[in-house]
Image 1 (tube, rainbow, N blue to C red):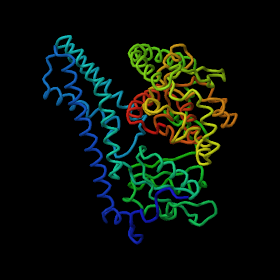
Image 2 (tube, helix red, strand yellow):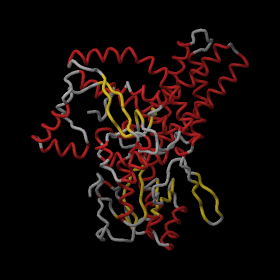
Image 3 (cartoon, one colour):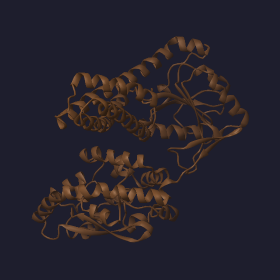
Length: 490
């Protein structure tokens, strides 16, 4: 296996020096500069978000008596310590979903404070401007922070140097996950293990840096140490936990999740043991009712607003290929019931015949269809309007009607046809249909057509096990750039 990190990418180490000497050799200053650069970039992002939000608030509420430079300074001065307390200016983490939740809490606290202050000394217009500015600051700040993170990733600054402790096989799996998700902010340098790299089952391109007893030599090189707890003997674990005495910024004990939720876990003190409190939130009736209420609050005004756009697109379809502009596609809905999904037609009326003929004559296309159930060059798609609708996802707009009817939710696993669902194992199919299908989901804002069946399964499982209002909000807010950039659309 090759995961994009070879031994040559690991930092040069002088194994003859103690940890303090390694830190003095230049590794620690580089770590400090990285952290300072990341913090400065995030502060700059928040300052720009504050300036834009205040300016828009003043434009939308012209009756307010706000002074732009002074208001920007005061709000930013209040925002910085709040975000610092919430951990948003650290050198790595939290994960994007948790960052969204913390940013929302920060904006809510800032808006409440500004609202109270303006209600005591100024006019109602200033109170409205305060609330509006806080809401704008949340949205604008989120997107600007996302751009900042991507810039830092491209510069190799966002991810904290990380060492993995345990057997090469288990650590390699953790390393693969970290390398595939740079947003998590952890860049694996290598593995600390007593097992040799050439051991059976330890096929990994991550280098073996040293043994567990020599782990102190990496102090000043890595910011984060991740211990694969289930992979260590009791004596190894005792030895590994001595890393707490070393100047690593963070030490994480990683345990195989076994399918349990890993977002929003709560720790409990169980005397000599640490406990994790699990919550499968999506299966609680109260949460499903809350999810349905949010669907209606969002879907009703959006459906009214996009109705003229849908009418224009329907007319364009009929100009290209006479016939019905809409069609109903049978999908598997909640509890396995048949769901008629309403869509704008993007294909020729004889699409099935065209697909059958194309797959018979093109083995490569047949292999692509078997893996993704999508084609990069699909002969069924209408020229011009069909490709536009599919790349922009505007063909999905009529499904707002399915949401209003209660057949679907705004966020959830996409409803698949029978042939797609039957490609998964029975246990996963049963879990997938236990929740409402969605207009958009985690797969759509990350992999979309670029993810095969295994990726779809992995991301749908993550959503179902880790559902929260914050996860839904994250997917909803990420859907906008995904649609605008046609990320992964075919």
